[in-house]
Length: 397
Image (tube, rainbow, N blue to C red; front, top):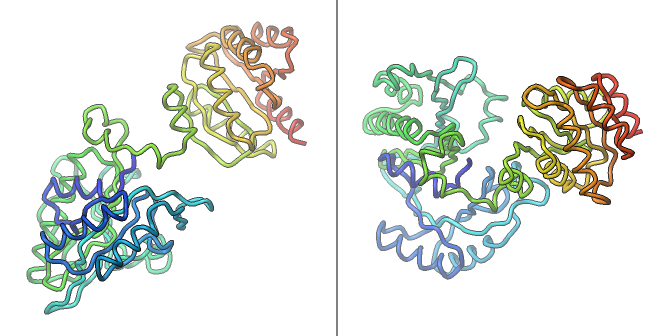
């Protein structure tokens, strides 16, 4: 589950990670009130207005701007709130901005220059260990840094039995070229950041940039946080932070129906039971000349109600030109699945307006195939992978 910047910063602050302070505003008027409050609390004269959407690169799309007075705060906030923000990480349509974060200006003058770093904590799936990834090239796309200057990216793997050790935090601060107070502040920052990551059951904390201020303090100026969905049952406070407006509407609807659904960009919908078989089915679709329009795992139960719900979800995508059902009858018998498909097809009537290919294998597969063939419905049945692929290719031709 992705969080907004302001929500991620709330979590960081609760674990004593220093953050750039800010207040959320939903209207231009609220933005002015927030700016006045920040001036009273922090003494800041300028304010940074940040669009709150689940996408990076907001500044490139005009979603992050500096206001030098209250009139500019109101003007900029009114321009950003309600806009469709287009960034390198959004679709061509962009994302609608419903709220902004009014932040204090932390790039104030001082005795030394400011510096920006990149720091993230995530799971290294190759080793099964958490790691801290960091770089001196903060404020830039980390993908660009990795491609053009990979030697500027460092990683520190964490032993799960011990957690982040003090020498590792010092090593990170040293590799970032820090000394004196800034060195000490960075060791505290990294240690607190790792604690926040573990104790919040997150799957990623990405801070870009981490700022060394002109008075050598270390703080998170941004925060991209992803909470592990599987831990939300014990993190009810974080679960309440979910913003459904930022998520794919079809995926949200499918989740409410208990379906494991991921929206893709192809033209062939697929309904499968089991994640592994679903991946193989997507490969099958590509081999047949199509592109998968979705990942849909209906699980071990494929009764008429569940199958119909799956069909209706798939058909919400106007790009779908055909549907391939690929079910292995292990937990559920194939004839039961066939009953569900036939009943769902009849219930949907004219709503089922694309070709349907059904491949059933496993217990009672032969009975299931006969049931579909004898149903009189325009459903094409198959038993082998190659046969299903040929039929998908034929309907796309």
